[in-house]
Length: 563
RNA sequence: GCGGUCGUAGCUCAAUUGGAUAGAGCAACAGGCUACGAACUUGUAGGUUGGGGGUUCGAGUCCCUCCGACCGCGCCA
Image (cartoon, rainbow, N blue to C red; front, side):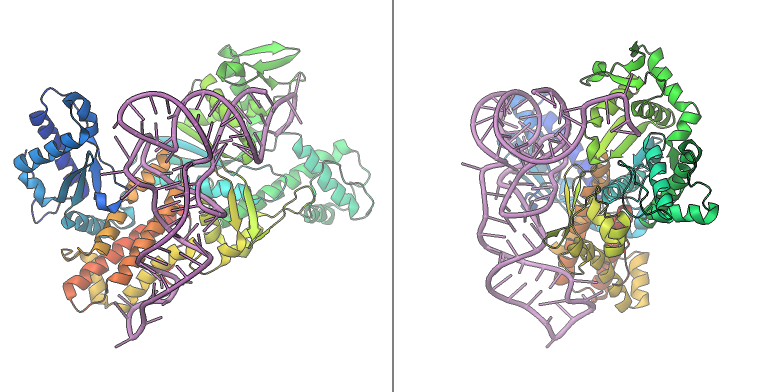
């Protein structure tokens, strides 16, 4: 084989590993002729003493070689040293340990990553467009009140995932569905009407199942201001749709303001009612009927859900001809999957039972495997050691706006996405507001601000030189290498978060980057008298700043220049 | 009862989907600024991964079975 790597053009970690894989494949052929072909793959060991990367080929080879993994690994390394001495320029260490082959890259490989990140800026590691269209639905709420915090969590998760997917080259379309088609809108209309009447008659009864809380009062007042008392004593059939429509529009507008304040802009606000009016619901149902997956019983139309793993068949169209909520789900997913290759829903904690059902719907529609469902689990709100009570029944709802007022957008976005979506979240308002080292948001932001501060102190010509590209050959301190290695992980981390629908991994990575930077800062004086070293370290700072800013951007958190 | 999600350090959570001695932060204890922001950092201590079986070179991860928590199970949405 020929290695095209030269001193002038240092190898990237990827090319170094590719060279190693090729050499190892040859070594296997030499040492163990006739063995089945094995793909040489790498992973990053958890423990630093095992090097930057390791490969487990010896385990896969051991059986065919009738030897132990340890012996195979040792033999392969001996073969590599004898027949591929060029690898020495790329790897500082190639060691067989307990059956693994552990690799430590030469500093030049890591230096080349730093140079690349400085050069590519915040676009570092982005994948080109891959042509896959993804519909991502999250947050969606009933238009019957202000957004509550669990919907905020779904928004944090969904929007972070959306940005991470864009980074990976997906064509992402984020949408919100307004559940304005069901009986709840009637309830909303009656609730507002009761508030309207109570303005002149304090004894007017509030509906048993109405929406409590004060937030409907201003809507009622606005109606009275604009339209006077003409609805007092009118029949329900006259005012119901009118009141419901005004309330829905007002509340949806409010939800929209909250979401935008939260840093999210939806591509589509889809009214469920509009789907009905456009005949989309009927089209979805027809699709199932045509596929022979429905039957009629007692005047209702059933979907054969049991054929897709559900425990009972489900009604699609009621005896009176009105479609059920399930019909909406069928239709909306049918509609989405016609314009997208994948549909991902981020749902609330009360929708656990729907994961299987939605996947069953996708399969029934002929789109098996193209729907994914994430559940944003419940949030327990704390203020220090004290639990904040949230009784929706009593009208004591804590809204997303309340939380944003108290702790700000940055902390809320970060905390809501910080742990696995499936796990319930304990959210401490006191901690989120705290500007201390207990607070991971400030820890990460501080890293960014600290770098900005160093650039303020440095001379303009140094900064310009560092950004234009400079010799990085002095970067070899363990803290420098550790930081560079961490920065190089960005693309892999984002891809991983996307592939596993695990956006919380990005917050951990952000903390890891900040941690490695702070350690580097403590151990290495940046603005040293040695010009070459100073410029190299400034370049490393710039690369770190790019990566931190990029991760924070994906998370929807600001990257401050000073704090 | 059936189905879903989960159970990891005192607390809050990770663990590159089957890899090596299970890692961080907080809390506890002991250190580090005449240095570019101490909103930082170094170290110590902390575990039978709910229990028990199985699969294999190798299991927190996969399978079975108990225990426990939360959530679903309507011609509501």
